[in-house]
Length: 203
Image (cartoon, rainbow, N blue to C red; front, side, top):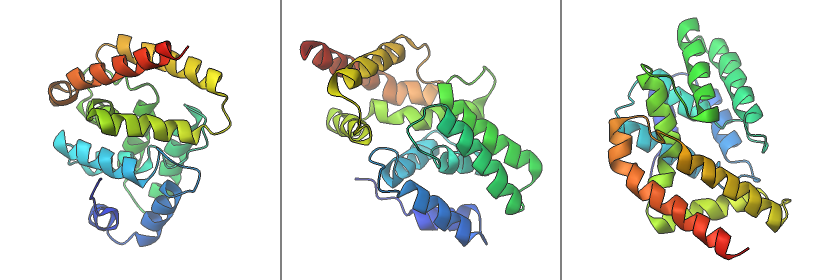
């Protein structure tokens, strides 16, 4: 269980903006969320810290990266980036930093930061760190994803998930930081392969 004080983390990150922090926590706590919730937010922030991501723009990117979640991959991240632009501009963040936060949010669409983008690499890896968690935690994350897709028939879910697993298993590199590869890559591949085999056995 993640034990991360999100309210304290926000106050430390952007002092003087409690209303914005409350809005973001409310978004992450929406009742339809099962995976993209405050537990994922806290875990991603912890993973970012493990990767050395102390910069404010990187932490803000994690706070905003799934702030909009309506089950539309890609569109949700783009809307989240736009939300970051709007809210952070209103909060008085420097325009350069606001643009950088939005850019980093968009990195999480495809998790393919360009070479020479260490901030993007850290944000991407922090978002995907769950893939390298222990098997029980990984299985719980998959179950949470399935719970979010309540209206999806089982056969459609299975096909969609198998396609996603094939994509992740052929992505090179899956993790873009040396620390991410060292900590999570071996276990991530084992988790992905185990889930893939389980789905294939169920067909």
